Image (tube, rainbow, N blue to C red; front, side, top):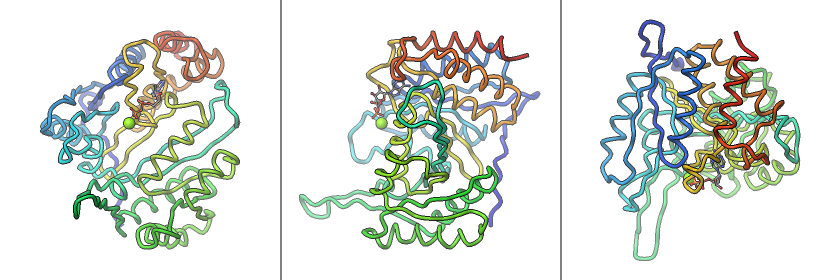
Length: 349
Ligand code: ADP
Ligand code: MG
């Protein structure tokens, strides 16, 4: 087995260089808040900002972004738009994940006590295959009026992500891994994914393993979410289930997600939304991006700054309940950021 080597690379005088890809919609304003907060707490991180023009059909910007992430080892991103509808212009977000071989996506979904929701005390981790499956982007018109779209599942990637899930469960004291699939219909592709996870489960006898068909899984999630611990699934199911769970916990603006390969890590808001309709109005919930920045600080080993910021966010969201409208509050984005900055002084130093 190849050993995971998630070692942040670029470090100069104790400071880390991190690639920042603001993306479109609310990305740039949320990144602005992260930079303001980092400046305030003196986080030892220097951002290398790369803007990607959504209107251009070539991928020069994306290639440059990939080069900088390879150099820095770590990135933080908003959702990058691809305006072109030409079939040969593929999603930049997908290209980035594929070229950096970030095969695992991790979404920690833990309830926020200050956000009013139907279910309390949910604690689920979604682990999603992040580079293949339904996102192979191999579509063609075989004869006129007939489109074929390939779903690619490989033994090697199924094994890597399954191992990632069981290792994650082991390291984090989780008790159960549930593989989510549709192997009753997609017998070969989802069948391989399911069989692989069953085989690996045998290497982890201390962790319970079960599986669930995706449609039942969605019903179970909204009705009885507490039965889930770690969930493992292919790419598209991961996208949908992530959004279901984000919805259960208070919407698109709270959770952060992590993209991992053997060498690189990229942090971003959990639902990967662009938020075009709410951009520039000072209403976007900045918490998802700020949580992504906390994940990034943690990954870089800056535990002091990560913890300082985590405690301040906790106060703002769960105690002071300074919340944007998507979470039932009346605060603006900047009210939330100012509350966090105010709380840093209270909880820290
Ligand atoms: P898409 O990625 O499909 O463009 P949207 O950007 O439309 O998705 O986001 C889906 C929904 O979530 C929209 O109603 C949007 O306003 C909302 N949303 C996304 N991000 C945030 C955020 N940070 N704060 C508040 N609402 C958000
Ligand atoms: Mg989208």
